[in-house]
Image (cartoon, rainbow, N blue to C red; front, side, top):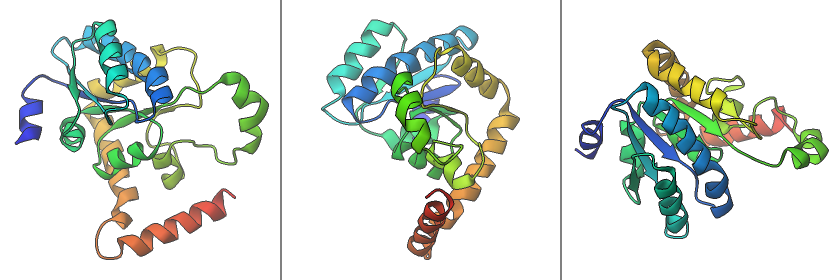
Length: 205
C-alpha cells in the first residue's frame, strides 16, 4: 500500500539515498539534489524521496534539502518502500547499494572522496576495476558508478536522464541485478553468500 501511495505522487519516482554517515551525507546529498534538479527540468512531474538513515543525520538532510529548493519529501522511515517504488535510485556507495540491488531497482552509485588522497594512496591499494558492491559482485559494470570522486554532476545527471528515458536500459539492469542477488535468496543463501565472499577475496586480494 505504501509503495502504491508513493508511486501515485508523481512520475518518474527517484529515490535519493545519501547514506548514514554525516560526512558522506554532507558531501553526497547536495550533489544528488543537483542531479534531481536536472531531472526535474526534463521530467516536471518527477517525484523525489530522500531517505533519512537516522536521527544523527536528520538535521543535515533537512537543512540540505531546504537550501536546495528541490521539491522533495523526506523519509525517516519506509526506506524499503521508497526503494521499491523508485524508477531510479541515486545511492551513496556502501552496503545500501546491495539493499537496492536485492530489491532489483535501477541505480546510480555515487561517492566523493578526496582526489589527492585517491591519487597519492588509494589507487595503489585498489585491485579491482570496480568500486561499488553490485559491480564487484557481478565482475562487470552493471550499474553506473561515479566514484571514488567526480568533478561535476553533469555526467551523473545525463546518465540518470538517459536511464529514465529508456525503460529498456532499466529493464536490462534489473535483470542483471536479479542475477547477482539470486544466490542470496532461498534456503542456501548463507552458504552462497559465504562462497561469494571467498570468491571476492580470491579475486581481489
